[in-house]
Length: 501
Image (tube, rainbow, N blue to C red; front, side):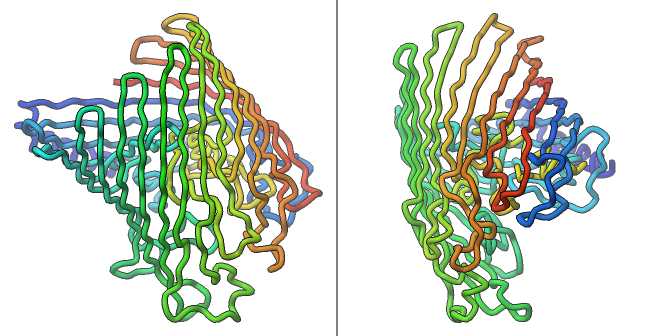
């Protein structure tokens, strides 16, 4: 409660010191949502399935049902200080489950700007200055994510510290940005997204992005180049001291195109990753350690690409569409190469959410591992796999096919339905180690099939009520490498009230 009043006082002081800005212009916007959840068997495991070797007993909770409510208030205020000069702010408040225990330790959630304990109170995650010049405009501070091209590359609602320059010239738009990814950055020994460890003045991660686009009334095309540099702390191959350190460099080249031809709409986004994923500094670790730490081999991104294709036909009041996603997976047998898994590494597509369960950001955020925790964190569909190879919000290592439709009954009432099939591109091993180093291969590639149904009704223009249901036929991918694991389907029923202003 003290944090709440402190945040409210801070916001009040901000208002007081910006009275001259009020005289010019101030625009408020935001939303409030309240969502109810009921999920049956978030663990994906049959109630009689034994605890297998692929994971630990803690993940086997959540075989029953879980039900709860979540909420969040989000408010933004943009102050026009002078012509061409603005201050943008935004905060989230009360983002938590109803009556769940609050966190006392500021544990962070990957992908969320604030820590869990902050987000449950008041978390200012956006604050930036934007000013125009005769040769373009600059945006500096914690800037909201905008994504690139199509929804497949979007990160709406997620902020990052950045300096951005934009130059609009007619239908053309050019931009350059520098983003701070993380301070004290390192790459996990088993997962490319990484975790912060250690100390040091230059152990961090940064990205540099250059984009160009051409915009039309009914579509547009664009290209983007991103370079990521991660300078890392010591690699934990020994207890004390840690001797070996490494850097990581990667490059992403993306293209998109979208166009509407009468009733037909088509879009596509393609991304290609290249560069050195892991490069050892001197001295390099000895070969004698390679049998245990397979990442001692320097890695290159090799033919790592993904593509999202989407088409629909609008025959008002009915719209039907199809989307296809291919995101290459990493082959554990190629020890010196990394062919996939870069969606999480680039931290993109959080706003994509093609289903209500599979690859859905909100489902993963609130349901977590087996739906067993009372406070919020980022989770995954696990089954009998493990955290290394579970299915998270990032749409990677996947072939995904989706057929969907929408019926707009009135200006206030609409119905949506979709059917999705997804399977892995590459079969991982249980520890991402090659089989010839002792890795155990997963048995099957199928993630599953999902049916989603939603109804939306506008009570007011700014107040919408949604009812949704999803059923996931669990695929045998979630058996991991254990043929004795028994899986079970899962289903979700949810309803949501959303106020926007």
